[in-house]
Image (cartoon, rainbow, N blue to C red; front, side):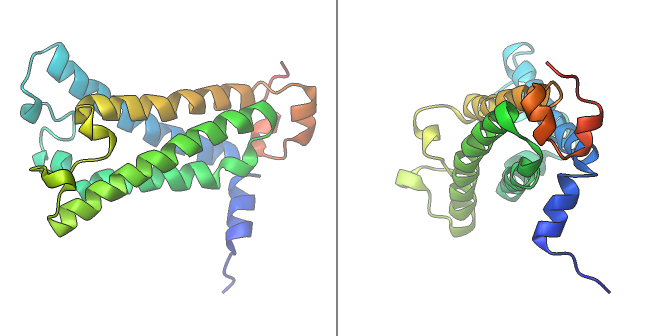
Length: 184
């Protein structure tokens, strides 16, 4: 049985399967983003108290919203996905993808801090609940809306530019997106 190396896996993901992998990854990202949007609507449009505003999945499964493992797991999936799909991007799209990756690194570290606090029971600055660094200044719902927007927007720009490369970028592309790209 042949075992694929990380280089082979990323080559495969960033070559023949880049478009499919990118579509699946973006579907996961949009679904997560929708959860945060629904939670925001529940709070600011419907006037629900924050503890009851749990998004779509949190309504039937309230423990999900309170699970630091789930939040950390998603932050890790985002980080890994951004890293694994990175090689498929070239030129302008690569710069935007890298910006999303850099922001996600910080977002991941914030979730790691929250997870460590939840597991240890020792909360930052004696707070009553796990608290991230920026959560010291901003409420959690608003902060996570900001983080998700700050990662999502450069990703959208990156994908847009990836599918509309200039001539030089098109000549450097080696992924499956090259066949559907429109030259800008």
